[in-house]
Length: 174
Image: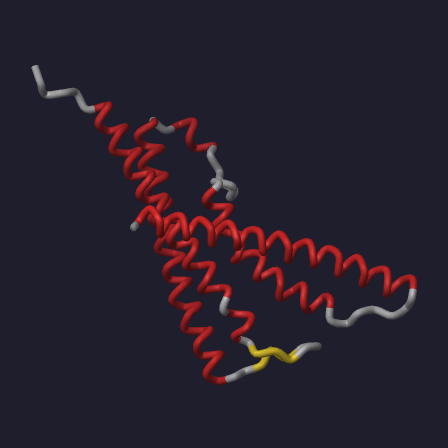
């Protein structure tokens, strides 16, 4: 059951990354068309910049868990050269726990903000007038995906830490 749930989760993470890629492609084409329309035809599309601003939020939160799963986030590993293998494993575990907690908090706050915006019906008014919750929902969704992915890393790093500490502990069978 848990294995199937993880396969579904992995599918959702991959689908989010694919959606983020398609959104990014759309943004690139839209900006290029807007530039052409603005400078060659003196007829800019006023909605492009605003829509791209909103879509950057979607790209970030739909693709972040996939990037985390691939260990693609920026990390400063300079300190690893000065630490033992055991200390590195401990640091990775602590970092994964901190990431899990931070994303869980972001999930909770994101849910509260999205629900509040939905109940109040506040629109985001710039060039376009759209319900604010339609922009915000991706924050708790992406944060939940990140929380689960960081949780998986906690389990992975905990196992690695145990293996390293068991290798370093002399056996008592003498």
